[in-house]
Image (tube, rainbow, N blue to C red):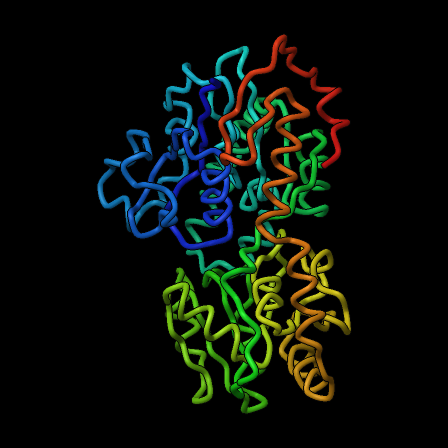
Length: 390
């Protein structure tokens, strides 16, 4: 039996990366789970909290509130995790997990959500963050060392998996590595097609600046359209102050509540440039379309005119025009759900199992995991691994 470890950067927020980490655990439920930090409320329900092994960073003062400010310490935290007993390591990383130290004869597969956004897309990141002048001066100096670490850490995985074609291209540009594309899992079984529809638009996202939720709120303010915003994050107070009388800010809600709002809305407003973006497909599983910015992962998941529409500029006027155009169109819920099913959890499992088998770790799909090392085993060379196509 192969010993398997799954490493996630940190469980400090609700987001798509955490959903993927949960599904990776479902793939190999006998695996041991590691993270630099794990706050109980952000750990997916499918992962037993007692199974997560954290780094020394878990005990830092006020870690629940200050985890962002501790960013220079995460490289040390992730490299302190002891994975010397493991034959197969699967990391889930948008930052640090890929830098974990493994045995020389272990196989390390990295599911990369994106290269570190705050160092590789620094100008975009800083332009929308409310940073004091002193931080704008000091941050580049701090990030210079982090970028050097990231480049070195990027050499650790034997095989990269990207969540989208756009992220695979970023991995190529930033790290000079090739990646297999396996889209994140969409749990279509959570959603049903509802005949009842309410008169509101929906935002379903973490409240962070790059998602440009301010555009959705401002457009609905301008048009007098009802908008429900589900999600939490550092931009919550700013967005709450921007919201007009037709906008309802709900914060974090249960999966059951989110599913109900998804099934009864008019459409999802998807105003940021996402690495992939699971929400449009979750809405499609509920038979609801998306109004999206024409960029990033949305181009790989939304079929223009069939499962949603696009706008081309990230400004209020463009979002408002797209909403008005959307209301002249009709949509087929069955077509929407069929698109979501192409990205269903079952597809994610099949592709990931196929990849692991091609890398020398076939699994018993009927029992969800239980990888057994074939006899004999030869680890693929990097140039061979790059040719594997899921």
